[in-house]
Length: 168
Image (cartoon, rainbow, N blue to C red; front, side, top):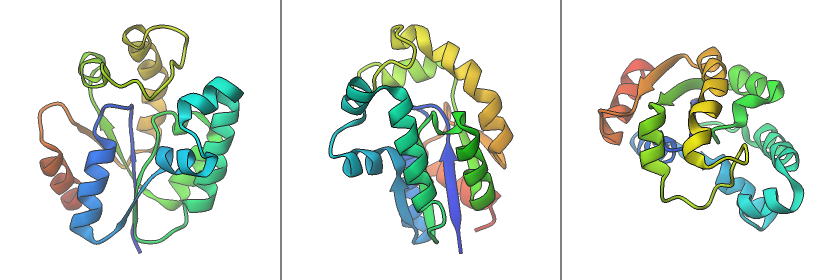
């Protein structure tokens, strides 16, 4: 039985690497944010706009608890899932965790054109990335079996490194 959770800020390659890993290992990829969209029948920006971040985070926790014990999966978890203690415990108790990371400037460059995520702080995303990253990095570090810098390697190289380091 294999459960791998990829954590990290958006723009670090979680979705792409999760799909590659799942394919190479014959596992099911599960993208938690997409599951939230499907379950709610609307996208995250609409959920946050109508109900606020707290409601979104509650939905995220509820869905995480439902799917976290599935077997033979690669989870692509949303960047903020680590902010709730309950989520951290679920992830730590059930998964092998890899933190995908990149510097704030690289993240901003990668997500500059993404419009499908609302602001976390009310600031422009350029201004909020360093602030939110600073808050989340200790949480990512706490959970991760190891971390991988995604700035200088291809998603395929990173997937191979994960397979090797997890001895799969």
